[in-house]
Structures are given as structure tokens and as C-alpha cells.
Length: 238
Image (cartoon, rainbow, N blue to C red):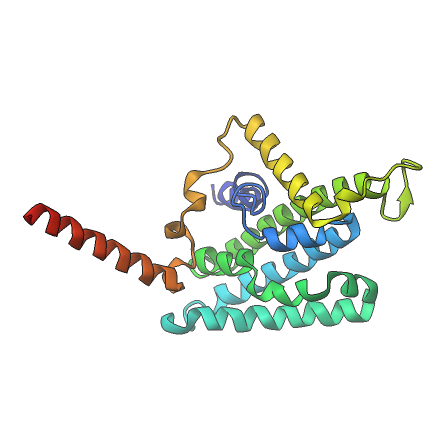
């Protein structure tokens, strides 16, 4: 039973709650680096390594980290792993590191990484947190690779530097609008195949965001709700 549960944790991030196609988070790096398959794989693998390591570390420290400063502590832990990954890329894949640019350091504040730290690693065992990191990382990498493949193939007529369709190229797909177009089409196809069941309405609500209680939006929404309640009460008294 425990093995089945861990298998569901692993597959959850790949299919049911794919961060890019279902939860619609992490779209900034997805659109920015998916101009080629190589860049997409590089970003996906880097984020996956950070996600797995940070999930494990935060799960180990969850009983030690004070509740009031947990988010800054998460960021420090994640930043440490991001620094290690960037040093490795600089040493062994300098061209890839240059191509990904600022998006490697920005993994520190990637909502997928922080979200899983708060929503899962902070509440579960080390092994379960590792499985969650692997599943979410694979799901993120798959989404990046799919978009990178489509955009590079249509934009250059080839993949990974090899020409597959001589003389064919649509430069639009190498540009930011092309990324939005491909992303929108993939979401539309997913909605059609699943008959609209893939995207959950609650995914768009700030109230279910794992970072909600640490965000200023929480206080702002509470103030708005209080004002509405007061106005309703005054209207009833009038």
C-alpha cells in the first residue's frame, strides 16, 4: 500500500498535476528557454536537481526551521543548491549556462520549487519528498522538452543542431509570441482531450496557493472581505 502511495506521488507531478500544463505555474522559464530542445532539457534537469535536493533538505529540517521564518529559510536552502548547479554548468557546460542566462539564478524564486517546499516537503517524510521532487521535476522537464521540440523544429527545421527538414523554417516560433502560441495550443489540445477536466478551477485561486499565507495578498484579501462584510451589515441596518 505504501509503495502504491509513493508511486502516485511520483506520477502526480508528471500527469495529474503537471506544473506547466495543469497547474499553470513556472511559465516564465518555460516560455523563455524553450526556443530549443537543448536549452529546455538543460533548464528542466537543472530545476529537477534543485527541486529534489531542496525537498529532501527541507523535509529533514522541517522540525528545526521556525514557523515564522520558514520561507526565508527555504530560499536560503534553495539558493545553496542553485549555486552548486550553476557552478557545475559553468565548469562543464559553459555554452548552455550562457544560453540559459539569468534563468538559472531565478530558479531560487521559481514558484514550483518554493511551492513544493511549502506544500509538500514541509509536511512529509524525506523519501516521500524526494519522490515528489522527482515527479514534479520530470513533469516540468517534459513540458519544457515538448515545447522546445516543437519550437525548434518549426523555427529552424531541425533538432539539436541537426537539419531534419531542409529549407524549412518559420522564424515566428523562435520569438516570444511563438512561445505563447505553442503554449496556448498545447493547453487547448489538453483541454480538448480531457474535455476540460485537466485544468482545475481552484488552480487559479490565490486562496489555494501554498504561499498564500506568506503573501501580502492574504492580508489584502482579508481586509477586502472585512470591508465587504461591514458594507453588507450597514446595508442591512439601513
